[in-house]
Length: 132
Image (cartoon, rainbow, N blue to C red; front, side, top):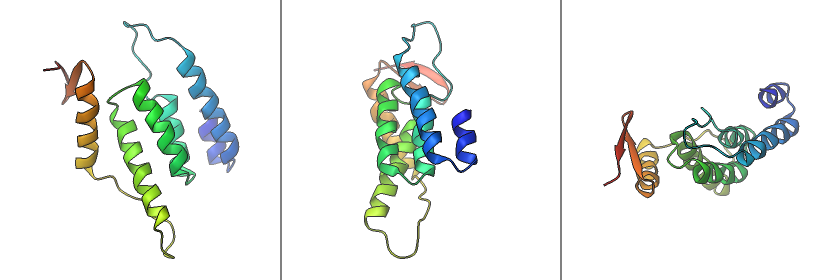
């Protein structure tokens, strides 16, 4: 919460430091098999923050770490795809100024299925199905 407040107060460096610290702390906590994980992991939020700050390279790295820690999370997969598109857009940017890229849903779905096939089970429309 403090990180997003700092971002709203036009303090992007402070926001990134706070959220990175929270993500590192969250990664250091061992998750027990019977306890649920975070609703939105701090690492995924850090990726979103870096995208807002127009840092797609840093965001991509954070989303990749979030995917390793929590495979198959749609938010992390969408964020990674958006960061990759922003990186590609920035590398071939014209003088038209920054644009917000939309993630193509089929690309996200493809990445989601690829990540899910590596896991022991697949989540399809809210149901947990065993891997085949």
